[in-house]
Image 1 (tube, rainbow, N blue to C red):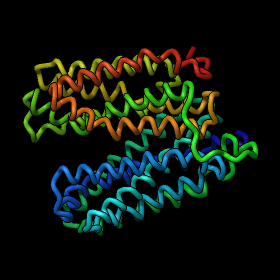
Image 2: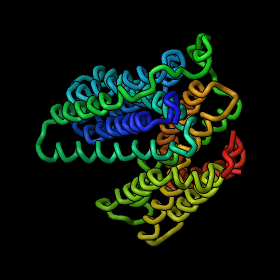
Image 3: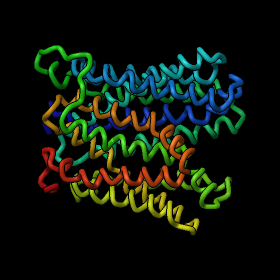
Length: 392
């Protein structure tokens, strides 16, 4: 293996640590939400507006992340985004004013958006020099971090640890992960115009195939967000599941997605991106159909497993394709695709709620199922982007 290759054991480890830190940091916030609501004394509507600041911060930061990565490489951008998330966590656990919480969420979201784009650009660089798929495994570490962060924070709070102390402990662990990754991250490998001595623009509008990749990411993120925010209500209100068991659906979905991503590199290597998009999309659509139509609770819950297994490797394949397309510089393309995808995560739950209010939650999920048809229908164009031999 060439010493100048981006694909080395050290750089693969650094990429995994970055994804792990991002998933861990983000999920640590979830158990702190009830404490924040009580501390601020706000109702659910006000809390919802505050939570919107996190998404706004993420989407606003993404367009600037790619030019920074193109000019300076991904290493300082990854470390800066991770540091911002770590330092924002204690603020989220202690701020007691609406304005302060809004600023903290904006900073937390902007740091997340910065880290998300930069670590995916780094992952694209590492995978580009590899002779096998790596992206699913990287994203699998994000899911593992999510489980560890939410579970660890919940255990600390249940043990009586104060929220501020739990947040500082979690932030310290994030800093340790970043410190381990820092010396192994790629240092001087800018991508795009900056790599050729040109000055990268501060914003580049997605174009060509990147728009399609972004739309497919949007649909996939929209499905994930809908299951997170509305899956439990679908089970309790329309499938007769007891409220104490309503969380099983998303838990099964998450377990299937995490397992699928950890196995995903071998799956993509064996089947190729086109078949993963085709059959993964079909499986996710079938799972949504089972959840919507099955009158038997165990079968409906099995539908969540099927959705998670089908959707697990869709986004990693989309990121790999974005790094291989020739229409835009990879760093700028990754930022553009990610921003479009996150728009689904940001606005999707609200859209589902609006449709559910007028036509019912099953109708909203039926529309979501129809949108997911775009994934298998687009498998051909996505699979043709500089397709490996096993993808033909």
